[in-house]
Image (tube, rainbow, N blue to C red; front, side, top):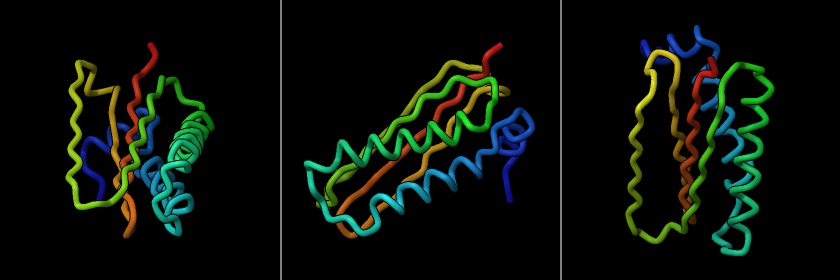
Length: 116
């Protein structure tokens, strides 16, 4: 069941679950069968970010978007991230999608800002 923020963003034009499902599908498609290969990381990140931006652009909503993607080798090391924002919580938002395999971790985040 969606929480109040998800329902509110959907009403404003952002279907958070659709965006998260798309990101999850893209990461799974690109990374599920991959072993860690440092030379491939830039390509994986580029493909995930571009696919996510395409989904967002295809929605044709009046938002600006920022997409970030982090891929790191799974070695047992920790990964922590955080963000802070000063924005309109009624119109702007963020979602973050983690993904991992036996060999790597990936976290993709989308930030959206309503254009007045």
